[in-house]
Length: 323
Ligand SMILES: Nc1nc2c(ncn2[C@@H]2O[C@H](COP(=O)(O)OP(=O)(O)OP(=O)(O)O)[C@@H](O)[C@H]2O)c(=O)[nH]1
Ligand SMILES: [Mg+2]
Image (spheres, rainbow, N blue to C red):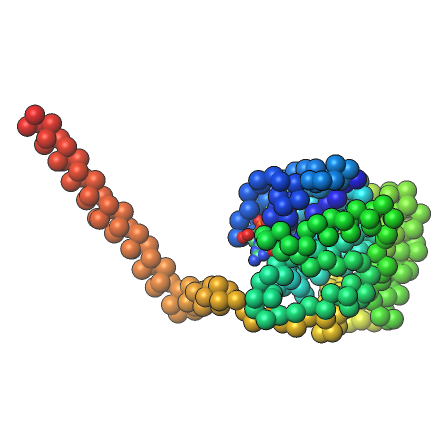
């Protein structure tokens, strides 16, 4: 069975991949480290393969790396998804989770960086979060190899038992709900033929995802009906289609997090990084600071280091000349 490791950039996918497989892929504390896919067998579970992928923020891809990940999800036929969520930034990470759930594959949420949450005094009510999302949630620390065994056991049993997410619908009754359901109903047959869940295809069609629209091969009449349904939703909700879907997801996430997440203090490292950012991007100081740094680099390169080497060279030539 094949598991796709899916999550935002820098949430610890590769660290988890290395912990699960014993590989030594490059890990870095900045986004965009992984740019290609790589698979590996899980240690102690020869039947399970995990695939490390580039980070992604939404299933509507923009960059080449994001396309790699979405293509793997849609065409690589994974049996299950391990969704890695950075527990220090749950709200933002869950935006992708809600879209993954629409795919309808057995999914387990790996709540990573729990060591950092604990250290900074935060807590997450795991059972409640799991119940709200309708999938198993396993707290882990990939870097400390904590919870990783339980995670893979839960993921393997979800696939073996064919446990699909219990929930794919996050919108309360209203215009957005009506529109998604109307579109899902309209395209259902096309979605089945294209091997996509109707709910996932419906939100992508509403978001005007050309790749998905092309795969569905809708006729003129169907396109027209969808168009009307979306326009009506925009008029009733007073939001454009992208804002409407984003609002639906964020409203749900906000409500879930309010009941399950106790915010941790910001870590010392993050506070320091924010303070540096404030100076480097300040309206008035940014340019003088930039010029000062450039001048320092220039002086160091040409005066201090340059002089040192030119003196060394002179001394060398002098010594040779004397010899
Ligand atoms: N404190 C803590 N740090 C972690 C944990 N897991 C990963 N990290 C750190 O988070 C950073 C990002 O880890 P990666 O594994 O490269 O993240 P990624 O999701 O593969 O990142 P991209 O490939 O850029 O999308 C690294 O500095 C890791 O050491 C964890 O459980 N706890
Ligand atoms: Mg990576």
